[in-house]
Image (cartoon, rainbow, N blue to C red):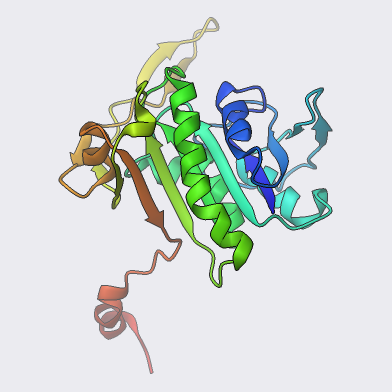
Length: 252
């Protein structure tokens, strides 16, 4: 069993070390992570410059690029073998609802999924790494439920899971809910500042509050004290309205 581990907080992040520890004993582990924090980079690939890969003292490889770059390089030549599973995280903060569109953590897992490899993205609900040891136990339990099936029979079709873990000392004893993505309100207004040179600069505003957070959503599960596990897919097609658009814009 070969496991590829990535993240978006950088190769020195405590969450990456916790995920690697959670993977120990399930197979051989390769770590390829960004050199620096790359949160919010989504699925971006670096196409305007070459990338470099380095090896840290602890054996982790790191790349001067995005989370997607890391997994893409690993899948297309950096590693001598194809992984059987890609895991990403654990992120320093939640990736629920609309967050998944922007998340580098989810994107790293998704890159493996796009290459046909089962993948899991792990995130802590709150920032700060509180109760990381308990989150590590949750990650290990999730892997223990999935890895044996992959060892016996590789997945006929890849799957992609998004897991959000409350920062609690008893996280490994919490209920686990299989959920759908909720929705957030629009992001708050930009923050304007003046640089030392007198130029107006802008910071992207904080994420909006949960808008759709009813029962069955990832927001509701975590707010209720449960671990949220959301199966994701990449197909963005608006299947329900294909016929409507065909009648408006199609041409025989």
